[in-house]
Length: 195
Image (tube, rainbow, N blue to C red):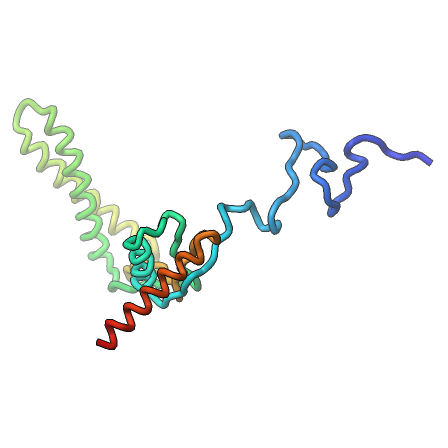
């Protein structure tokens, strides 16, 4: 009976021991650490409060900062993220051309200013020509780009991410100090509301 020898023979998938892993093209790999879901990022943290909106979480961190808490050890984490696309209006070929003309005019103005700096003669005319040519090309490109969509997206919109709630987290070794300060904040807030 023959047996294999060497480092690769001792390695078995799923077994413990970083020194038993085979070497790869980049050298010896390191053994996985943590829970296996990626590298450990910083010290362990504790959630000291959860709030329905960002301003409430921001007030908590601001209160901690006002009371000389080391806020560089805190974070505001938004959870239950939702993508919200707010429709701003209908997009027509004419409106696309108008928006393109505005963008092109800004670009033409920039190019006109660059050329105008180095012009010996009438620099104002160079700037105006750049602005007009930029607006014309912008309008053409805006109209063509909208026409090429074939009516697939005849509206303009703005996208934003919103969180369902915001958690304030701190490093685990500072959690008790943060909770004490948070308790004082809630007591002073309830005393103000009662008065």
